[in-house]
Length: 338
Image: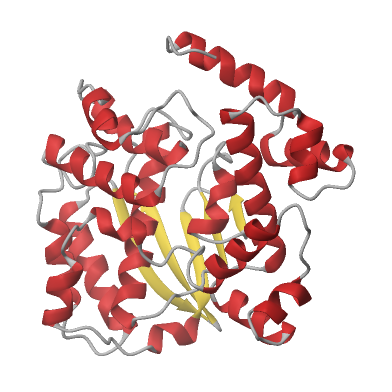
């Protein structure tokens, strides 16, 4: 939900009521801990752009006119390598974004995407609008880069220039599980040989890609796709049985080593998927049912309820009972039954 609140921050700053758009997409801000289906998020993305006539969500001093995303992509067509395509992207973004500047460079055996503020224009370092501006721009650049080379590009680490937000756990699915929160600029690192990847898209492919854009980029090259989805589905279906990586590899007719490598290629790991799956189910059950916490822990494959308590506090910072109490209070404020 943190990404949704960030995306709405520009609308609120410009005095627009987001309620009709949220209703149209079936998204409720009262259920703060619920994960929004990515297709609804993409629809909201495009609705906000249409409402504001601004592909940058009203975040900056001047709007990014509709069509900017298409011209960004068309400017990258005809390049030979990803490095050349990203260089063109950086030059284009300088024309349409005054507050943020993007640079791509090589540093020894790794490459960097840096996003820096040219001048202060937000309400502080941790202003939700500022946080989302960095989140959105990195997501846009990374997704477009992946699309042009027709493969996922693993980010080894990202340093974000603000305090760790409440929704930072989701960064492992969107960016990388190796995120830090310090410094004055955003710095995303990946292996430098990825800049030499050939561009594999043409004008015909771009025409199809632009259908549903720019919101569609939020659905592309997430880190919970392909093999990760298959592993997550097996883990979910087996509950309360607690599958090991060997069990899952056997069901997928892969060696454990191959499964590990495939997950690593998608920027994930078996441990990360298992934790994310349990967390999402736990939050959904706490939100939508009155199931006792002990029974919920057993359904998630925890032999000892105390182990579930420790895990839940690690995920959210509060106990399951505190989570339910806070959710009930939020619903009461919103006028919904607890």
